[in-house]
Length: 312
Image (cartoon, rainbow, N blue to C red):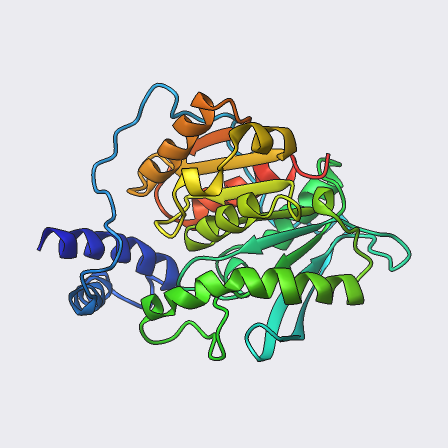
């Protein structure tokens, strides 16, 4: 019963993010969480309930300023498109949302940031709940980031990749996403966009389930990625000793390892454990503890901070 209660609390937080409060009353959202939680089997990962903050669990950088995510009319804007590629790993056509920066030109070459989503989303999730293009446009206007192409993939690598039904049943597909990204998405980008190649020009980051994916893929494939970020990484994150088998090698190769979580997020112990291990093994990284829970308000701040520190 305790496990069911924990699941309800976590799912309630998640469903508030995926539903519009003005359309769905609180009691209805909670009731739906109760029904879903009671249907889940016992093998679902245990979510910690108690949050214990240590002296090192603080913000490494100030929060983004007011208006950082508001679309400005008097600046140049990037462009967002949805494209289709064929995934040999999945055996079907799949979609990517792609942001190209202000002043984009096929005559220039750009590094790529792969930005992943949570367990209940798809390639549109960042745009559904926030305005990542506005955040990036504003940073370009302030000359704070390197021009880059941002790719929003669908981390559910299976033939039916829509986030419908029991979203937890897609767990194997989230693991299969590594093959899709490495063997299909990156080659597609190199064949169709003016992108720079090599690990120094590939960054990956994401939130919740996507944060776990980003750490799992980025840290295990440092021949492909030099910039890795996990925002409020979920229990799908592999054990740190599996991700980093040789701390000295990781320390010599990683250009940026950015970890973050909200100070009211029940998943914070995952980031805390990673942070402690990295400290003990002298692997350089950033540990950013934001004010907030498991929601987009935290992750947009991470995007603001992370994007300024890659490809430099």
